[in-house]
Amino acid sequence: MYKSNYKIPPIFFLSICMLGCNSECNQKSPPYSGYSRSISESRNKGVFQYEVSADKSIWMLDTGFSISIEKAWVENSWSGQVLVFGKTPIRKDDSSYQIILKLIIDSSHKQSKSNYFYFVGSSHLDTFIYHRCQNYYSNRIDTIKVPLYRELLDYIPSKKNREAFDTITFTKKSHN
Image (cartoon, rainbow, N blue to C red):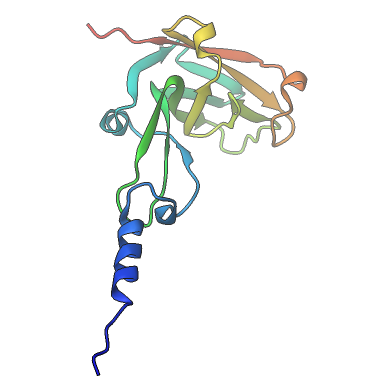
């Protein structure tokens, strides 16, 4: 008696479906918002727009506590999708932008502890920040303003209950 194996075609079909780049069975997680960690990475992903410089190079936040900008650039907002098989595709949004900041935080008095929490845009003050430019087109195309907040609590209050103590204005760098 001849026995045929009917299990091979369904397994073959299922493996082809899983290898499909954007099929639902190949997605490991929901899409995520992305940001580049360097200008070269931003260029490689095809989302880099231009470098920016700030109106002030150093901000004194508290006594002996200052921040300065090491690098800053603007890129298109983008998202990715983690897949089981294959390379993660990048979905670039040409209509929205984000500014990426690499900061240097200097505390000349290691013992001095601030009673405040600082936020750049809606992000905690850190050495690496990305800020989505929500009202990008309401400003001039080459100027982006990012508010600085100082709060007593570890979270930023709602928009109607917060007030910026300063603003960083970034302008497009001209490369001669």
